[in-house]
Image (cartoon, rainbow, N blue to C red; front, top):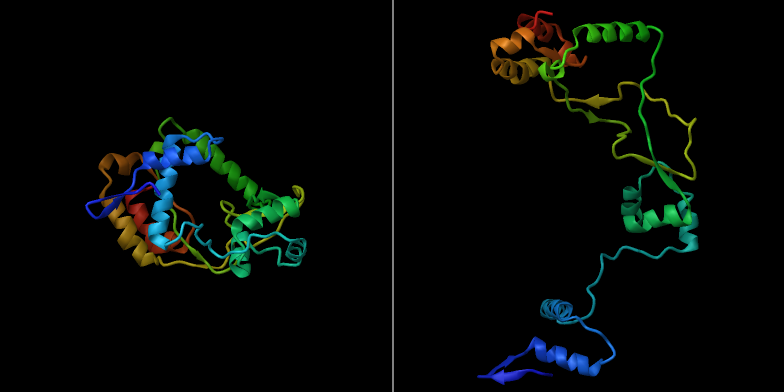
Length: 237
């Protein structure tokens, strides 16, 4: 309403608009900077959509009804909140409110531990004694560690992003799974030697080859006879 037509074009003043707003709503305390930001945002929305109304949301259901909450109890308990959001069309935020405020559940992080047998204890003691005898201040700085990436084919638990929801912490609850889950890798013994070991060893100097340690696990590509033989040529012990 406060526009002025100058040389055939309409021009508007934020200051004039603010003055009219204060006159119309004299009982409201309006900050000038906040008013300018809000006005620019409303104008931009009008230019983009042709309306100053609120934009439509994602369409995901956000209403938490008692009937819906009761149905949650019947859903497969191993399903994650993210998957439930995709299956039901309900936002993850709503699912979190349901399990917390309606079902009164709490998230607990799982801990993965390895079962030890009698034969494992002497081996552990032997390694600890070796470590104590050979430990020095820069031992870890002189140790090279290697690992591999796997694609798991079953429901392998990743404790970093896995949470279990329950009404209380279950101290005696555990699930037994195989130590080595079904998985597939892309690294063969030949590729391990040609693409990893050879370029790695070529970058080591004589001092590192004589005094540093090389650590790897028992993966097939690591423990194959050809791989072990190649390592022994450079790391005698």
